[in-house]
Picture 1 (tube, one colour):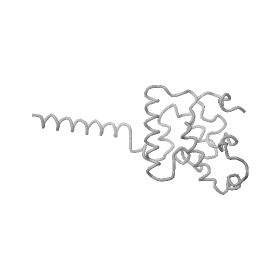
Picture 2 (cartoon, helix red, strand yellow):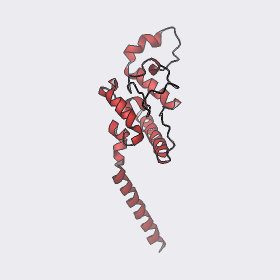
Picture 3 (tube, one colour):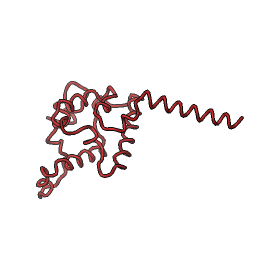
Picture 4 (tube, one colour):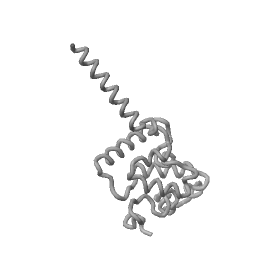
Length: 161
């Protein structure tokens, strides 16, 4: 009887995971299609702004927002970030103006330099301290004039004009 109960539990668990994977199209989240990032309606403005900005022809969300040192760091951070996003979306605790965390800021900065090494080479080798993010000056490049705000205007308290 114990074995039947255990076997039934395992079958039900496998069925539940299978239904979850099928209904959520979970394998799509292992890829890097920006439309997948846009599945949560809170990302509509970020996706639309990226779609109409300069980087849409050259870079996807994961090109900028995930680390590229190793495949392990890439998927670990992708999983961590995804779980954090699912929890904040499910519990409705996401802010109106979505902002990258300090950790994501560091990843984005590293990816700007990784893609634009020849362009920023003289900046990195110069005598000035490199204590600014690329988007401090290039505010509209990745996500357009509205940035990542869900509001109708750029968040001027955080990013003064």
